[in-house]
Length: 274
Image (tube, rainbow, N blue to C red; front, side, top):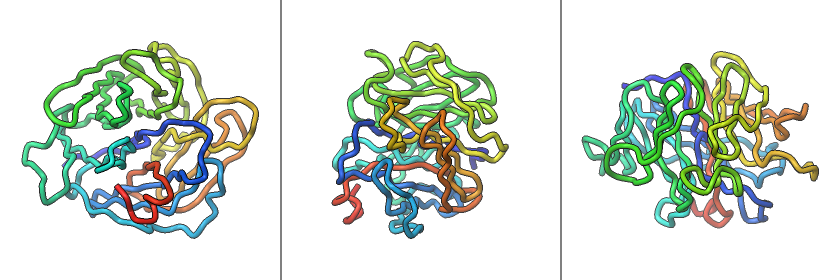
């Protein structure tokens, strides 16, 4: 059984930032390893109020108890939310009933920290692991090994990643902001060069689980196309402007849950679309 102090699902998760359309929502998500279950709330368009009746309006059984679950939005009609789980270097893209014993994809080893985002710009969320500053990414949904490797960060850092249109580079890190969280400090590469492009301060408690999320600020002043989020024992803390003072908080989940989000259109949300 894999035990991790956190998981950067938003770590994780495919989102192209642009002016939000009225029919698009970001749904906050949780994976509960003890139940092998995803929980998704109603969601809101980026920048809208999150002061709505809180609770899981959809649950999805996936994986096996003890897995680390990731929800990875992508442009695949049959699985737009990209559900997958990770355990000891094995990735499972299929549900419990079709779960292959060796996994669908082999990448990583016990103790690695998993994440997902589209690094090669094909619209499909890639699976990756972080180990002591080493980033390894598989661009296929089956097979073994990494197609993309680079170094950013160091031991004990926690990786964070978000697809952002126009960020990254034109080769192996297309349209992506990625970086590490280090005891309340966010150290990000915004141009895919391996160099620090931005730093922010937010969080810092040992149990904090960090996520980069789509920009939640309605401030018209140009700024980063992402916001900072912390999940702490069932409470979410969002900093809409990474350099601002405002913090939004709400309750959703419990200690031991692994946080994330998915992006959906409202008609897909209403029917529980995948």
